[in-house]
Image (tube, one colour):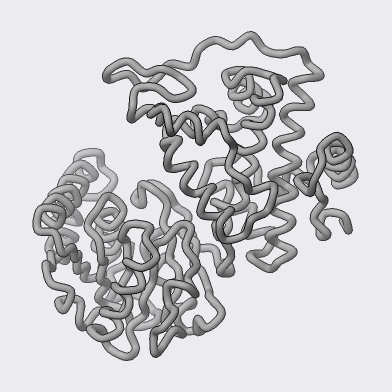
Amino acid sequence: MPRAAEREGPGIERIGIAGAGTMGSGIAQLAALAGFEAVLHDPDPDALRTGVDRLRGALERGAERKRWSREEAGEAGARLRAAGDLTELRGCELVVEACPEDLELKRALFARLEEVCGADAILASNTSSLSIGAVAEGLRAPDRVCGMHFFNPPALMRLVEVVAAEHTSGRAIEATMDVAKAMGREPVRCGDSPGFIVNRCNRPFTLESLLVLDEGVATHSQIDAVLREDGGFRMGPFELMDLIGIDVNLEVARSLHSQRPLERWRPHPIQERMVAEGRLGRKSGRGFYSYGEGEAGARPEAEMPPPKVRRDLLERVICQLANEAAFAAGEEVATPEDIDAAMRLGLNHPRGPFEWVARLGPEHVVSTLEALGTRTPGARYDVAPLLART
């Protein structure tokens, strides 16, 4: 990665990161390795100390694994500064907020950042589900606020969603895109819509699979096996929910549905019940699968369903992924090309949703959705206008 002084771009040399948790310290690591001065802030001294220790440990491990040299690790560490007081972010040309997903907390933080930081400073939120426009509400200069959504862990995941709200300036977007590229990430631009690209367009991967399970078409382990073996996905939806946390997945579903109460976004009762029972996935020892102490959770051998069931199951999930992506593209949340790139980079999908449409044929995708719609009341399988026109 080139040092900041060697880069052409928006003149950003110092980046502040507000929040020293796993995500915040990971973003600070990327900034320091890219040659930026990185100022990591957290009001909790213990959290700040832990975040700095986590970052320095990651730099050391990366050098041991030859991801960068020891000299580069030392230089990156020297560019890091811990800041216990928010006023120490004064002088940062870009501040990335990485705090808990609480709208009022973020609004209060951005109001203080507006007072602390210079008039030209760009203020970015790492939120994964909240509206950037809502975060910027009440600020004197909402044009300098954008989304800069990294994926976890930031050091390994290449995608960054750069989110433009209604009042976000082109300068803020272009500068943020340039910083993401300088960090070695692959940014995609998107509009300020619930879930942005990835969290929105991937809803059917879990929600449609939960419906298949609830209908008794296949077991959760069979659904996982079909999507892995026949679809080429690295993990099935139930393995993925166990890894992320069923409570986390449910909270994202609730957030999106509260912002836009569409039938196809409605959280499934199976998730609600499992969270109420404390079955949260790997972190609780039991979710859809059971995990012994220290075990990652072995994939049990699943007896595969008959070939027609396998094909129908796979196509049902894929066609809903394509449909949601087509709704998003039709609303100009992002281009089809950027949606495909985001789903591959952010989730390691084998193909983007529009690439699936090209593979299956748009007529087949539409007819599959229409057939599902004839036996399901409501608007869950309504075909996106963009898909219907292809």
